[in-house]
Image (tube, rainbow, N blue to C red; front, side, top):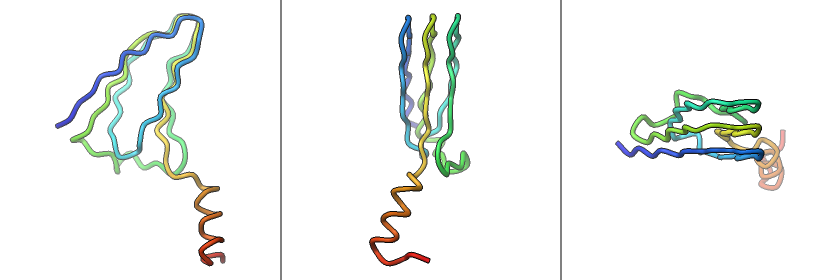
Amino acid sequence: MVSSVIEAVAVMGNIEITISPDITVECDGDSLLGTFVLKYDGRVNQAVANRDKVVRVTGTAYVGVVTIHVKGPDEKLLARLGRTLGFDE
């Protein structure tokens, strides 16, 4: 099992972390007059995540924002690619 820990501390600023959907994300952060959030963007199915690859994000947001994005495929990019390749319906 491959495990990584990211400690994010935002003080009057923003931190954005983008993670692939095939990696399991564990999020444990606190905020004081700010936000510490985990968001799933695009077509992301949590069941796809591999339990052998784990990223644990910890930390604190002091009057700031820590956002962890788990990004699926870009729908607009896939649609453009489909039109280009002739898969347009």
